[in-house]
Image (cartoon, rainbow, N blue to C red; front, side):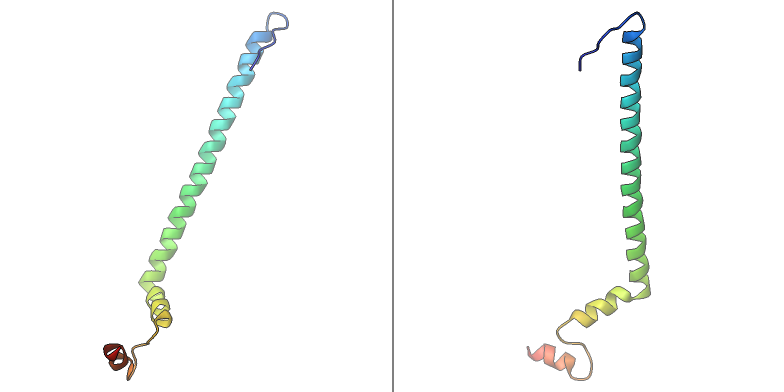
Length: 79
């Protein structure tokens, strides 16, 4: 990046502008990382609540090829 010096305060103002750009980039990176971390924490909390409520077990039971009802256990054992 070339700094064009115009007059006495040109270099100082150019350096000040560069410092502002770096500070703005750092703030943006901090915001992106914070939002990503918050999204992960919320997703884990939702999974925790779904597991505690038994929703995950119900989904696994529905997805199984043989639901354990009357003859389901015998069918699985004979398989």
